[in-house]
Length: 254
Picture 1 (cartoon, helix red, strand yellow):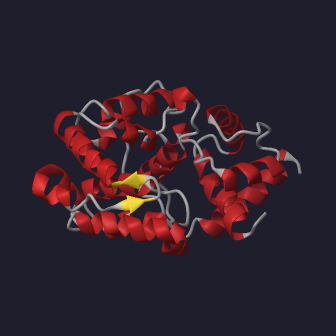
Picture 2 (cartoon, helix red, strand yellow):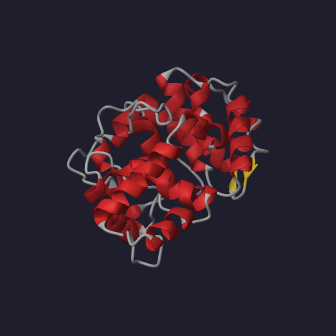
C-alpha cells in the first residue's frame, strides 16, 4: 500500500468507528454520563485508570466507582470524609484495589485544591511535543501526598519506558474535538497535534501489519515511532487513527 492508499484506508476506518454508537461498548460511556466539566474529567481519569482487561468488566467497575462517589465525582473528591472513604476498601479491579482508590481520591483532592485541577496540571509544558515530560511530571505531582508504594504502579511513567496507554487514552478523550461526539474536546489548552495513540496489544499489532510500526515492544520508543508515522497522515489530528487501529484489531481481528 502506498502512503496515500494507507491514509485513505485508515480515514475510512476512522469514519466507520468514530461514531456515537462506539460509546455504547466503550469505557468512554462513563464520563458521558456527566455534564459538568469537572465531573467529566474526573470520571474519565478514574475510568481510564482501570481500563485494562475485559471491557465489560471495566465498564461495570467504573460504574461502581461512580456509585461509591454518589455519582458526583467532583463534589465527592472535594468534600468527602474519612468515614465515606471506608466504603472504598472493598473495591477491586484486577490489581487496582481499595487502598489505591482511596489514594487516588486524596491525590485528586490535592490536585484540584492546590494545583488548579487536572487540565492545569496536564497543560504545564506547552513546549512538550508528545506529552512525555507532561505525564512524567503528572506522576511526580500525583504522588506528592502520602501513599503506599504499591499504588505507584497504577500511574505510568514514559521516562521509565512505559507507553502510558491509559493516560494517552484519557488525553484523547479530554482534548480531541470533532463533530462525531465521541471524544469530549473539553481541554482547549493542549493542541490535538501533541496527542499520542494509546498503544496496546491490538493497536500495536495492527500498526505493525500496516507498516506503521517496526519496534516489537509496546513501549514509549514504539509510541514515538508510531507518532511520527501517524503525524505524516494527519499532522493536526494524528490520534484520530486510534479509532481505526483499535477497530481493526478488536472488532475486525485484522
